[in-house]
Image (cartoon, rainbow, N blue to C red; front, side, top):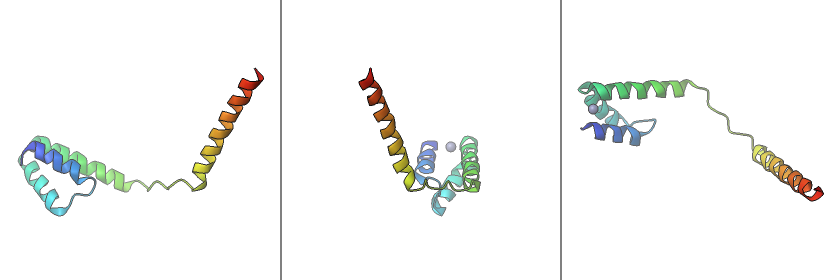
Length: 84
Ligand SMILES: [Zn+2]
């Protein structure tokens, strides 16, 4: 595997590499210091992401409230323009 292939596979693999790909990458990294560093960084960042609490979805009324606030804002702008 070349370094280019290494990066392509790592990026395509996303957050969860399948076992075969992970093995291939590790094999390349064991003989390539540069890629080893990248792979280690990748694993560390994955561990950090996994350790973070999941971000909750915004409540369903959130989008509605944002839209209403935007409408209010636009309306106020229009009113101001009319009174000038
Ligand atoms: Zn390499």
